[in-house]
Image (tube, rainbow over all chains, first blue to last red; front, side, top):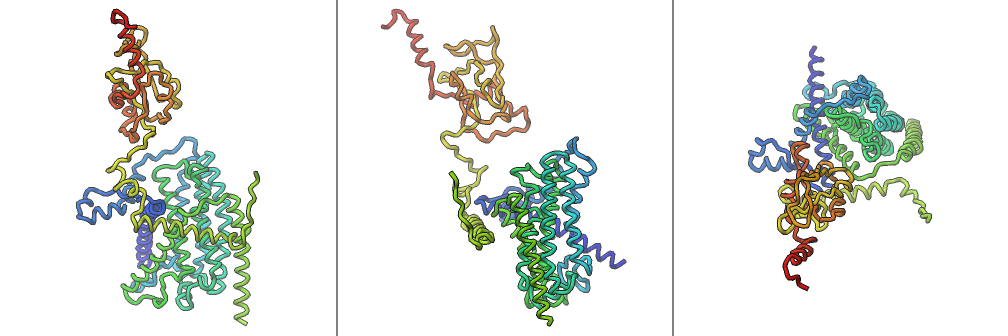
Length: 350
Length: 190
């Protein structure tokens, strides 16, 4: 009973944190894109009461802090339009399927060491990483289903593209992390972090894995330069062309939640999770526990900024270039990486 | 002509130099905007758009409005050429009919009973201005047209005339009118 209650609290807390992060990631996306393009970004929205606060109110307004609230409110209040030519059941199902996997992945990520006596992970699975890859690959179904259910050309093309793209990069991504587990000898993500606390971050051991994982993560989350399922310039809106209001917002949320999940994975696998050099013991006090969570979130946010920054930097890949990169470069590279790591470990063991 | 493509070196084919270059240039723009206040809005004028309106260029094509001549008369003679040429069919003219409204100025036989431009359809192409034989419609400087309903965005003759103002610059008939008036005076000047 106590276990259920504590788990529930953790689930709610993580869910809330991710939703907040989603809202402010959208703001960050708009602000950073504005700065890169020499604009100022959202600086108008503010509830009248907030403007009554001297100085601070105006400052928060110019940073666009209230913008996500307005955006959310708008998404709820907009007309939810279902075109009459769509396949209704799937059309309604698709946004949920697109969003749920990204949240499920977060269940096995250790986002802190301990708070009191409680380990800061929702589910401490022994097969953490297998579970993660199993769930991540479900994300593609939401998009494919949306493309199919919309019964219209552009979403259909977007859905087809995304299925090919995500399946291709899934393989490279999965193979890129195998060397890590050869080195660590554990699939449990908490154990991976403990190992890194002792022996140094895994990016030092396998930088090629990190590179492949990072790029595959961009492809998996449909971010530029690999946002072919959406590609506004050719496919209108890609798989979500026919969606409006909250159903569109769910797709949007799914994309950002997937980004957060991918960032969390990278932090956990390659950058030592909640540890820092010198701060690697599980927390004894509440303050230290919170500090560990803070470290994890800071690392995660750094990756989110990277995701956003890259979006406003690189043009979109052509479809054949994308496939070429996935199948002819990364998969052989990932295989070679596994082989080399295995041989080195074997030599060392002898 | 066949453009010869240079073969990329191995280092270049890794995409990494391009990536680093991208980070460098976007990063420098970000720093420029964020810390040196070097953004577009500040460059244009000391402030941001809604408070400090944008000054339009000289040849800017804004909203088309009807104009009056130097004496305050309607210049349009309801020939419907603009209605015909309008690509998005934004203009709708109701002619006065055989024994309807007569023109409020000399040298013209009629003027439109009603003249409507749907500003939601208008693409600001300027064909109406170009085709008008009476130089009665001009694209002016307005760029921010807003309304709370679609009906509100259909501008009628009265609104167009009041927004357009007088356009004394081109006085096509002034000369002819003076000539005609002189003809009425007797004895005729040679």
